[in-house]
Image 1 (cartoon, rainbow, N blue to C red):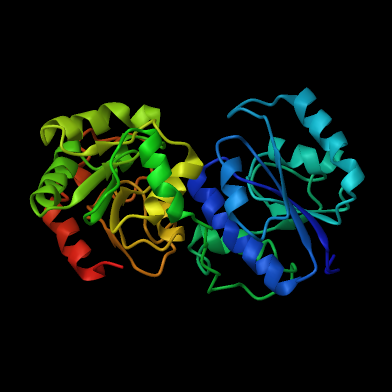
Image 2 (cartoon, rainbow, N blue to C red):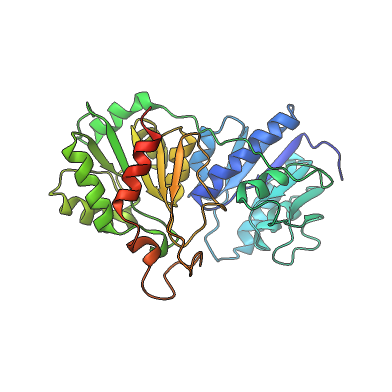
Length: 342
């Protein structure tokens, strides 16, 4: 089971932030097995990121929806992959269904963690050591090592390829002017739920401060973030650039790479900003920055950590969300001053 595997299939995660962290695994695989070829299966939500990861040799869409088995589709994809003759599959999600495709594809070594019962589907089962490896990125990278390898502490940093030179065209296509002043990007969304979203009024106060200093403020997010983005912009009389729901994931990567500083909730855009090397302040509510921190060089995390923290819930079970409500903009502006500008 310790044989070097030159042809590797990775079953990738569905969350944007998780896929960014998965790049650390891809980098480690290329470092330890320079001749390996890596193919990654990913849903549409994270597939575009793979083109920005030079370690990935090939990518294939996994057209599976959240919380759906879609057994026929998984059988079809598994059979489609048989001719690649993979030596190893590394399954990053912890579900039973995520292990079906490598099994159907007949991949001889199928690696993953003991989470949902997957005996037989996986034959290289690993046990998580959360005490010695508190970060999710460590869990991912460890799967790329042999079962008897020491637990890894330091992991490679994700580094997405970005194209800041494309930003003028992106803005022109949106009928927006090119920024001629420093740009603060605000990312007020969080797909996971409201317990990870800093209040609109705090984002608006921060935006107003930077606008009054002569900065341009970009508001980024998906179409689902549009209501809170609109509320922030309304609070500052429409002086921000509202990009919510107007860009692709590829374009968001490039736009973030061209910013001066970024403030984000614990979200996929937070991980993207870190992976393109932006000075970043990340605001944490119900989640723990020790588990999924931004992995860039010039980042800060801010969190209050009250007695009820961390609950990791989508919505505050106590109904007050004090971990975010009481985290005032001054904490974030102090952190922005610490990280400076690039």
